[in-house]
Length: 92
Ligand SMILES: [Zn+2]
Image (cartoon, rainbow, N blue to C red):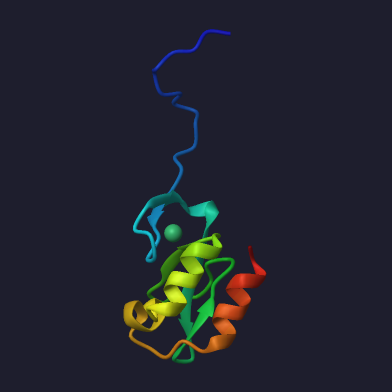
């Protein structure tokens, strides 16, 4: 097998999003999306919340950081209940 630097035109473009905790650009599939439902932060597994959303790594450090700095509240400008963080930990 030959390795070339040419992009395979058949390769799917991987969507990249930025994690609000570490600010790294990560493939969307490795992130958890959090959107807004009824004025509260809610994990948006299948992208059905048509609201403004933010992304967090599936990583304890990032969720810890988001919790400590209240990043969900700051980024989404809405209350983020503790249950959201609990659900985030359940996903990693
Ligand atoms: Zn992160």
